Image (cartoon, one colour):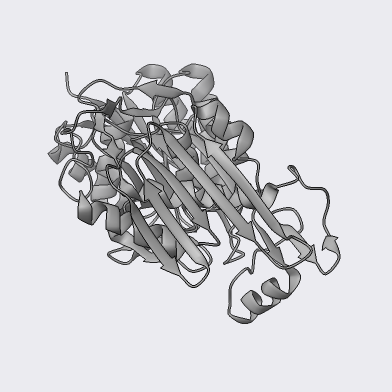
Length: 415
């Protein structure tokens, strides 16, 4: 029996286009132009998947999704929407929508979404990485299992540097996909790999083919801390700052659950020699180690001073407890300079630690050494751009995103 898809959209041209395209792909298609007709068809025959527009006459798409859930709790639903906002994406995803796509969407992006929602990987039933090659090498002595999340989850907030209301929708992905950032509206995507690191000033940005993902480091650090190797991150522009830490991303992954996947494991990058970069008083060393250790020394002007912390990774709990809660921080005068440069437009009292001449001006620290722990969070996120787990000891002093990404490139060149 062919897979049955119900298309619900009040625009006849969209229904007609989707009927033709989906029929050519071998799907059986019925459609409805409003919510009441859609409910009648749903009650008469259960489809395998629903494509549902948000803006519908009489019953809007989100309300209709709530009613669909009462009829069929596990029916895959893909939400499409023109003039979408992140609040609509949040509501739809929390109601169990398999995906959320903005209009105008590309047909390739929609077909890929349908395949994922039906559990078929990509359209041909396989799961190639976006660059056409398997994202993870399988050679090497040490490997770890591939992992994804158990269900789609969503977070929203403001971008730290753009100030724009934004969000991310995290979707499970098949083995061999890697971690990929994708546009909500198009099929454009960029892998979480150092080859696509485009900017490493005050945050790490990925860019490919006209699509950019800004401030990815905290989310990537969390994925690394939880051992996630395959994940789709749907977004536009900038990953939300949330409270300035990675704690909310931890809660998202705890809610979604981590699923170990079958197939070949991911080869661990085992550092076998010493690498060092020096730049004035900044140093970054990567050397052999039986595990994964980050030793960071921070030395700032008063009232911060010198802070030192050694993080020995011992699984997700160690990351969640020791590193994830540490927030972005900066001096008031730095934020003034960033604003003049068009950055930190989303800096708020609740998403970063502000430091004045006499100390913290917006609340209490979560750790006495919160600042150096946040630096370790950034190191983890940047080194995740290696594209595979790392076994090494990283010793850093006063380094930033540029140094981290440069070292990742050095490691890959030496592999």
